[in-house]
Image (tube, rainbow, N blue to C red; front, top):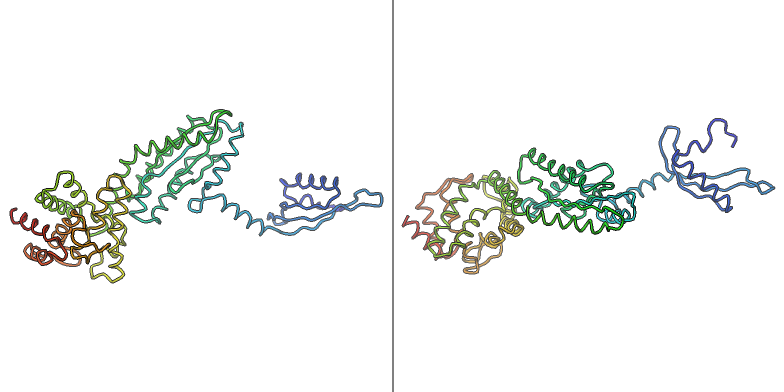
Length: 427
């Protein structure tokens, strides 16, 4: 009171002054205590949240002659509340909004005609399951984060962008026509293509499928627009799936050949030998095609093994050997995530099983091992023995043939070995 230099009102943050005074007027009318939270600005210019408890002071005539109160610094509490609020509304991986916030905002906007037209866009990253199975979830998360950055860069300031599923993003664009939404979609596709040209590893290309739909007037439901956008996205995903899977698989194979001592020529030789064995065993053409595909991809699971283990020149340790033995299971998961490769997934899983049951990962024995896996075991062993490796020199053909004969009935199917030797001698 009677402060000629600065009034308390001047300390209150400008955006709060009117609200605080109206609250004082309200409690004066009701003759109740004042309780309110607001921001003040300190002499150093720092903003602080305070909680005020106050009351009106009355004179003998019952008129208000003063207002008094005490304030408490609640900045730390407010910061914690803001942090909790932020975490409840945002996705932990991308820092975009989460599904709950998106749904709440969607329902709120459904009744706000001033936001019309409202366009919904659904964006799905193609091939995420394949990437996760091939490289692990850490690498998959990096792809999701990169996609989130690209989406955010293409959207406008007021657009609501949320990660609504593992590999899916949903965007609400207020006061946006379908035509304008389609423009944003094209920009997004172009930005993904530009990103893919910059990165070295083609296995981490970002391929997306999008769908948009627009609520034009108040009579329409925003949920219908959301469903329509989702349907369009899924249809496009079906059209894109084959090409995107093929591109990702080609990239995975190229990466595998680059990282390990395995080469494409090695895979082709095994495919050639395996097909010869299968043909001499009277397998039908469609099975021979599966055998060739399986031969090319049997070691695809090595993409998930550390380079230091893959290319170690000496003998692997017990722990390293255990890790290496995981590659058939990794390969199986990769194949199962792609419709084109699913038919050969079981063969990939079993290609290190042995006739006597001492193999891995299941310890299958004899004819319980798929025939194509038994065929590949022989052709793979022969080619591996007759080619130079980091850790040893190649054997002669005679030495390799003798080794295969010695392991017939233990490591290898005796019938497959017999066909292989006869076929080799005839050629």
